[in-house]
Length: 217
Figure 1 (tube, rainbow, N blue to C red):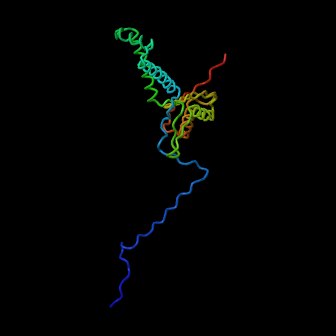
Figure 2 (cartoon, one colour):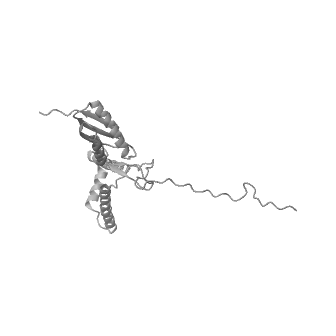
Figure 3 (spheres, rainbow, N blue to C red):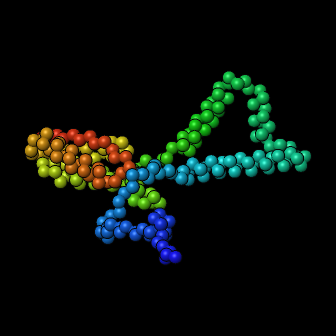
């Protein structure tokens, strides 16, 4: 009898172990790459309105509970509750004081709803995330200062003022020499690069205006 072939058929042997691909080396001093996902708006804790509402509710609930317990103990109800119940029973719905009280209560309720559904921290501009677990924000004053410093680096710019908003950055510059169109073009290029370098999740649109300084006297 012939020898038995011990060769393993193709595709039936042990799968070959894939070698891990080498990771590209990263410069230790270089900043980590930013993710495409932004940090989102930052929400204010609203401590003062929440504390005021909590104190008012606690005081009202405490006084009402005390009055209810007193009535259960066969004592007369407080004068303010009897007077309030009598006024609510006697006054019609179209009375001036009833309408005023309803308007004030509706305004306070609307104010609380607006505080609950709006972020509140408008001075913080959301930035791109360097890591999924990290949120970053930049204050408007700091962003405006960066843009102002970059604008002053342009040749011909004597003075610059920046007004930073969430959706627009307004730059007003004074040029004491060079053509105004050339200064404006250089400012557009420099400030566009500066806005990109801020790393904001929603870069604001630029509005640049250049003029000559007014004459003294």
